[in-house]
Amino acid sequence: MTSDTTQTDSVAETTENEKLRELVTRARAVLWDFDGPICRLFAGHSSERVATGLVRWLEGRGLHGLLTEGERESLDPHVVLRAVDRRHPGSDLVAELEARLTHEELHAASSAWPTPYADPLIRTWVALGSRLAIATNNSPLVVRAYLESRGLTACFDPHIYGRTQDLHHLKPDPHCLNRALNATGAAPAEALMIGDTPSDHEASLRAGVPFLGYAHNARKEKLLKEAGATLIVDSLEPVLRILRGQA
Image (cartoon, rainbow, N blue to C red; front, side, top):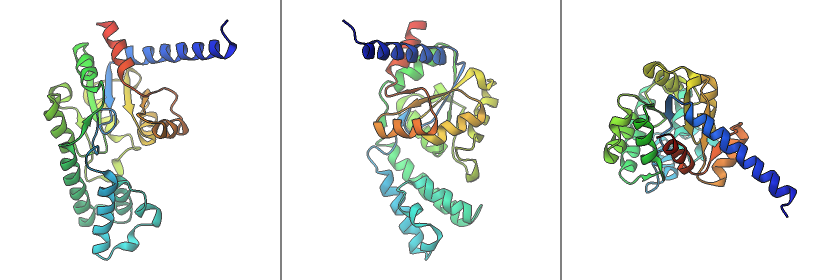
């Protein structure tokens, strides 16, 4: 005998699968966040260490008071970069800090771990005629370096939209998503954003683009759910399976 709980779980799973299939099959343009859905950029080069290094660099210049305690302890280099830009927008200090972060990201790219199923998923989407773009807060130099190492550049080129020195355009601002939509000629409703952070989700909402959350662990899933994401996968394998069923 099947319990009511088991039946309810089965119905919920079927509904989620149907929603995922609809989301994936109607996408004519796919906008990818980079660090997370495509690779773990800092898998062999700790982002926490990078953030700490940026904080220490600021402190070495006598700028300890530029950051709040929470910003210093965030262990997120983008939090540090945004905080400095808010207080000194467009300054040489921000430009140098951004260059230091780009250098660290480039170093990290050489030891980044490909996200399972990401490479074949990207190639399959391209083979089916979808247009792909990257919309990221990482440096586009870093994205290109990684894609070249995987032989994936042609799948996205020239649609790689990343961090510039106009840091107010970082996600959750939808600027890079809107650039991708305009360049690919896709209407927001026929596009799909794949991201792994609340800022990705907020940017997709502001751009009017449907969102698929990718969470490789429970913490990521919790943050996405708290941000309002309703469709989240812990693996890209079911997405690839759906596409291969279309081929």
